[in-house]
Length: 148
Image (cartoon, rainbow, N blue to C red; front, side, top):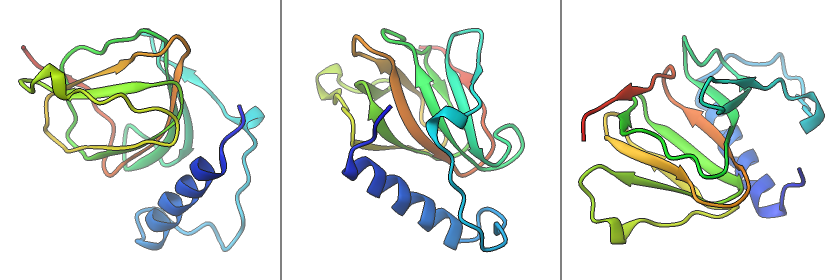
């Protein structure tokens, strides 16, 4: 997977912002390089892939590369932490429950999104190819289904 200059710049800026705020422990002043071939993918039973970059997503804030299968539509859910994402490839949408469907925005590579904690929403990978995002969540990962 080749990242555009814009995508790479935004990922670096988000990462630098997170690291300078003290959200994660310092890395002893060392540069961390992780070629895509060295990502360690974990796949959920729904087919969503997580490649952890920093932090343990089940216990603390974290950064990860996330892959949603093409055509995936999540059930309505909330998260108890804010989620910040940048689309690396594919096209996704995130729509709040109760929002007018005509306000749904397609987010292609290079696009940014934030889903506030506690906001019930549905996420979709609307492209014919898998959707890959760089994701930062300012608290531990959870996926809490809600009734529609």
